[in-house]
Image (cartoon, rainbow, N blue to C red; front, side, top):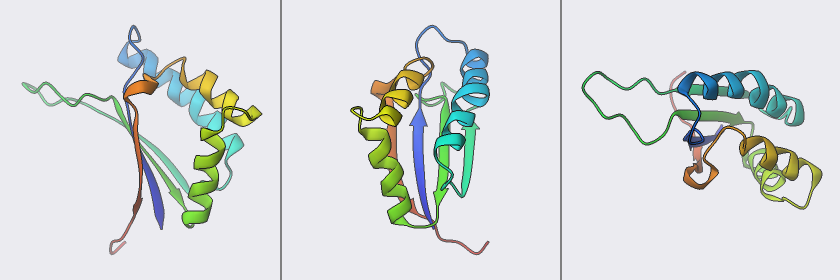
Amino acid sequence: MIKSITLIKRKPGLSREQFIHYYEEVHAPLAIKYFPTFKKYVRNYVIPLPGSKGPDFDCITEIWFEDIKAAMAVTAALGDYDTEIGRVFLRDEEKFMDRESRISFLVEERGDK
């Protein structure tokens, strides 16, 4: 199973609550609508431990794909801002995330269950 992991920082000026609300109520449904190939789509919101500074991001997003081909198709669609789908996601992401600090990568998930 191939998984995309993205570390996302909220846009300056947004509270944690505003960021989570927008991601859950607007962006996640949009992604699910446009990308039915997602096998699983999870947003993990960081809760800093007491006494710690916490990481320099607010969410760890995980998206599971059946195979590398499906993952690369979504990556290509999102990265092409000359297409309608690329422009839709570019405009949407600019509303709630600091796109410059986003870190994304693919991993091959292995485990017992």
